[in-house]
Image 1 (cartoon, rainbow, N blue to C red):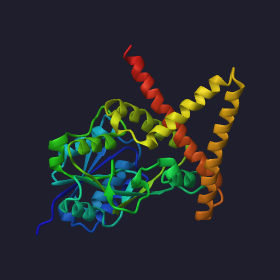
Image 2: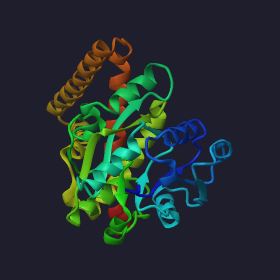
Image 3: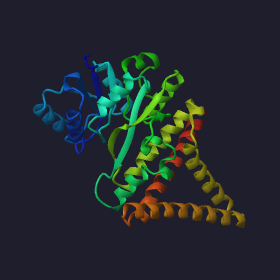
Image 4: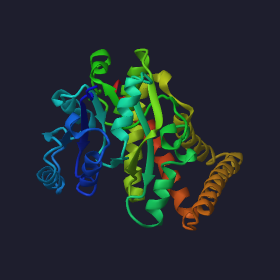
Length: 334
């Protein structure tokens, strides 16, 4: 029985540190190389990303690797350019920050052929971008339920139907049915795509046997920028699909609103000062407990402090950005 052809689409920008590792992992896949092609859609990188890709092409000519320009530099436009150039019956969306495990492609194809989902993906194994307490705290927070709620692709070990998955695989016909990626959303394009999959009657399937290593942001500043983008564009997506909101997405903006409201009320109401102090104290205690448990589990004392800092950065950046997205939208309509 012939193998189905697979096109692996990778939008990237300035990924010289990880792009070679990603390509080597694709080369090592258990799926036949003769049935795979790789399309790297580069946002006009200014580092040595293209040099790394060219070196890989010279050493591994049996795996077709094509480089496309993405002058817009945004992930949705890069994905759509890759889709247009792809020849495969099955399309897999990967990322320059991630490295798939050995049987990633084979398992994706298996699940699609078994009819488990219209769009299938797996679990992130989130690793620190480099050594140190802060990078390790960020990586731990990015897979901690307190940081990501019920985003099961970050930690589950049970196959199931879910609302979204990262780095997923689907048949080309799905694009004919629901359309390409929405280029008006500069972030959150994966979630929006999966909303349309589910609205069309399709299934988004998470298989924990499909795994990839994802390298988290290395600093709190980089983490804050990342979650600001996530929150801002989540706000824009919720304006379009309000019924898709999940409880994990409600809590950070509610927390931000309560902090602002109690701070303003505390100017004139002593009771509000006590409530504000209590809320901050309880929140800090919860984070410290999470840090302590993680420190004990991983036997790494610095997590007692670095994990709370990472989770607080995620919550505050994401929640504030979501409010700013909604306010900016309202002001633009006046």
